[in-house]
Picture 1 (cartoon, rainbow, N blue to C red):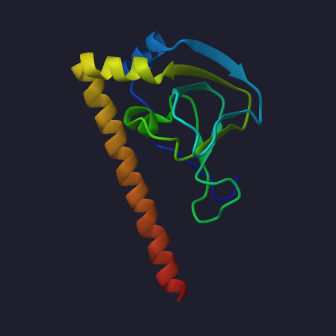
Picture 2 (picture 1 turned 30 degrees about the horizontal axis):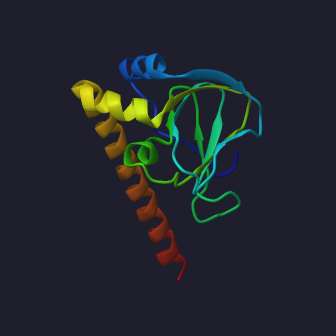
Length: 146
């Protein structure tokens, strides 16, 4: 897998169950299927039920290596909550089963369920911290090369 780390966006059992209840579809996706592209309008989020999905800033870019999302990972959450375009591209690496939750259902659930909202805030906070740490490491490695 050279350079690919496992993403830490795995949700709690409670959040997983809530997202599965909200899901409008659970589908089996083949290797190579792109769930969403960087820049696409956020239609909703994906919960990886089985298999692996590569999450990449820009495919082929070495600035930020792709991350691997496995079972229990949520993809597209920041864009779905913010209503902004997806900032990453998600592509199925192995046959994967994924649940899709449309944006309107996510927003409605967050507005009406305080516990769910708090769990999502924790997940987003963790993602921000992970991104900052990655940027720190990249910056540090660039300083040592100079």
